[in-house]
Image 1 (cartoon, rainbow, N blue to C red):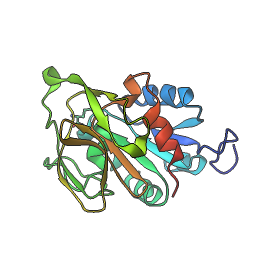
Image 2 (cartoon, helix red, strand yellow):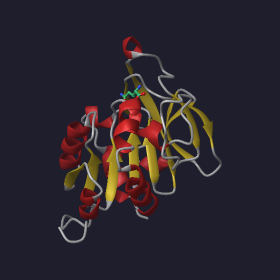
Image 3 (cartoon, protein in one colour):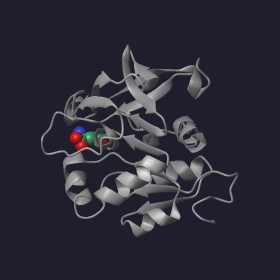
Image 4 (tube, rainbow, N blue to C red):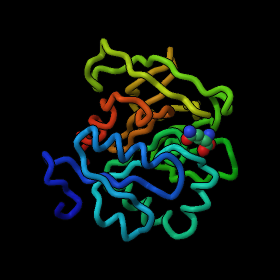
Length: 200
Ligand code: GLN
């Protein structure tokens, strides 16, 4: 690895924010997608990577951990490199979350409602319709939703990559990607590969 670029087909070396949550599953999914990855816990760790995944977990806890010195360098990194937030990660990328305990990074012009798809007992799986941009449009994506955020407002610059019924559940704005479900919990590496192909 040289300067955060993988020798492996030009994929970025992906950092996975490893403060809390299911970061290990993302690292395994990145291996399956053919990419190098690193855990990111400090600002120093960001120097070794050229893209970042913010995993699912608990956005209230992640807010507290980010506020212990990582918020600023992380925000700066995410404005310059591709970033993908899944579930709690999506909440942290949004403009607002409807919960005063969460201080999102405000990197994407979406408003979300935390736990908008229900609490733990309401976790569910469903087939998602995908946009042409994701490829294999005829093949649905299997979505695992765990206390998932619901998108309540979409800015004009945000495009939708996957829908649950008519609702957007995977969105992109520039080099910021967000999904309310957990692709790292399935064997389908399409979204990981899509993220790897995103360039600034
Ligand atoms: N509901 C959780 C939160 O608010 C997110 C759940 C998840 O990431 N699976 O942080």
